[in-house]
Picture 1 (cartoon, rainbow, N blue to C red):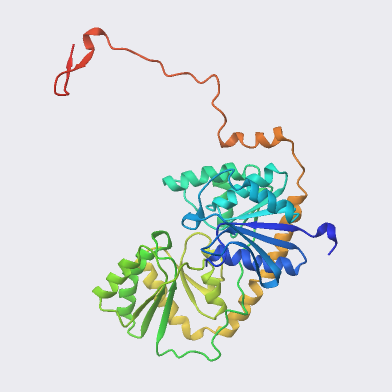
Picture 2: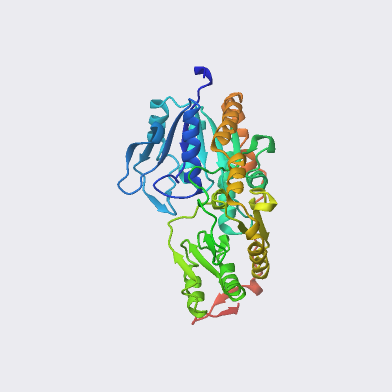
Length: 403
């Protein structure tokens, strides 16, 4: 690869190994494939426990664990300019040409994109999640995202639904947002050598046990499925505030021998792909970008309603004997590849570096839709006073009386 086409990329996020999750997987596998394409890749994240400083991973991937401690959900405390000196040092030392930030609620990502644009670097942002528009947390996050992405070079989303969501939340022009799905390491997730017996059906649930992941639905679905199918057993892998409700459900219905619960630090958001790569039939709710992930014959979709989920699981059990795990694995291998993701991301990098440089005035104009400075012609609300006959005064004891 010609030197002028060789990118020097800084991946930035609060979420990276040794933490586990979909974002962490995405950054790691994408970085490994970009290294194989002769690009230079450096990862910047915060310290995890005693893991601080510079570490090297497989393929010579360099990771900077800067000495910032997380304070909430693995996010560092927002400092705006507190990380500028160390980020500037890394950008100059590693001769970075492009900064790639990951995940909308990563504080480190937002600060890195802001500092990089201030220093004149081209930046790319990848959004991995969907957010609402009504609750207080989403309103706040959407405003922060709108400000950060006002000056971004290009953006990437993992599904078309995610692209629509990001464009609406951030106000980015749709032509600047690309759709590149996640992938799966099919060499790691393979079917069992021999086809499993149908005498016992094991349903595995891998998810963070929180409301937005549909954990409340399991409380009603699991007892009904166990009642309909005596040969069904559940394994629930995950942790979260809704775990208590599931344990209460298991005790109430005496399902201790049929519902096994294990703890995980974090669930993989690409669990559907990993399951399909193992040759397993998947049942999921029809929400977000899930319907885009697999062909209709490899997944059974249900509405986020307990009765419809029971119907979907019943349908999945009926077609289970027709599933060939090896064939499903080979199909996933062709459909989803990290090497393909890296090549498509490389195109986005080329587009970002091809964006024209802008002066300060042009850059600042992008921030106007985020909320301009209060204008001088905003009228002040007038003061008014009550007539003397209607004036009120406090009486002794705190009550009011007319004067």
